[in-house]
Image 1 (cartoon, helix red, strand yellow):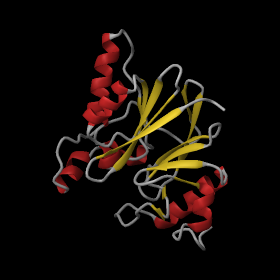
Image 2 (tube, rainbow, N blue to C red):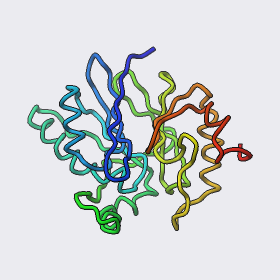
Image 3 (cartoon, helix red, strand yellow):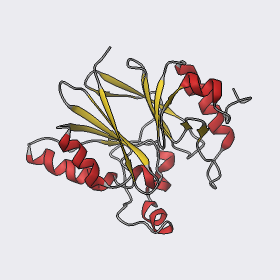
Image 4 (cartoon, rainbow, N blue to C red):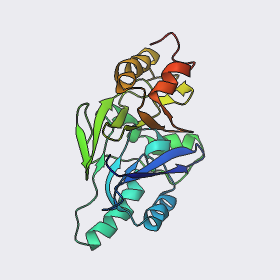
Length: 225
């Protein structure tokens, strides 16, 4: 088994799970869905003595991507001072560009400040593999909650980061104008369920779970698989 460690930092009033994953030896780390409160995330990075090599976004909602631009700015300043290249900000699928372009408007609707529109260095497409040391994150496109939602699957360590696609006991909302319930169920059935019952996942809000537990007991999935 490849050694790794993780930490979760709930951010914003939505208690969105910003995730850190790193290799204990090298301390090389990825940040997944820095939705806000970049200072808290930086404090955790410094406390854990991590070297941020990747910032990844599952989708374009403000609570998952609103802190990405400020966080990247802080990380880049430290990397440039050390003679390193800026940290790559990757994802989601390009079909969420309209959401990334309107984070500040989304935040204003909720009376929130400090969240910023953001453009990734590169959008992601299904089938790509993102490397972090020995870790290999496969990108799967899971539309429905948003059109460009992606998840990150590490098959070697049996761990996935699924954003707001699947939850412990629930699934992502699809009652937005761009939501698609049928697409979400299809993505869960055809892309997440085949990962295997032992596949653990970290979701965007609340506790994680396994594919097996959700297959057997998630009320939103019964009769849909």
